[in-house]
Image: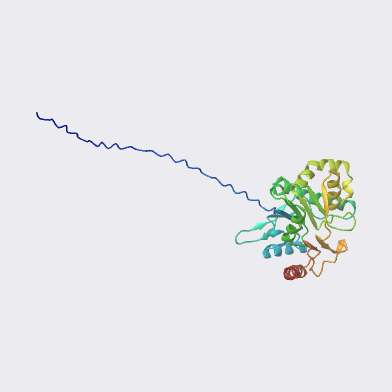
Length: 278
């Protein structure tokens, strides 16, 4: 009897398995917060007589040509009773801005009224033009004041650490402490001043005041904070000898002749170099 052999066939089946792997990606966003140091930007202006016989016109033109005084500020204006060129160019002609009031103040009480009206008109035009609102500080500088904007900015940074302060400065240790050769007001202080100007004219005997006294009395009436810095201005009218110009003041006054004016500029620059080496 024959035995049947069983044949076993081994079949290998290969199954291909596709494995899908999902990788979770985590994205980290790093935000850098940069703190910008406060920098006091300046709008600066002078009121100038356009009379050819006045020293002011030639002095201001030379200041612009040399790029000193108010012309180093972030923005500037020269106000005058008549439109006149400050530089003929090139690249472009630059002119003074007309204020519609005569600049010849007379003697007596009328002089005080006219003096105040002249400078108020200049301030009002600057405010209406938006120049005061565009910078942190506004500065009125007499044409014969040797003014260093960068020195003023350095002083301001010692007192104010952030924008929005409502402050003005007292700069003269004599009389009512605010002398008009250099007037420094914060943007907020000037906004409050114009908001309250009608009140000041109503409640104060302003027609007996000069412009600087009017600002002092009006600012105080409106409770605007003042800071005393008698070193800000070296002025012989404030019993501070302005020459030689070696102090660290922001302005020296008065220097009506171009020769003495620019001698003061150079003395101040040399004094700065000396202080840097100390």
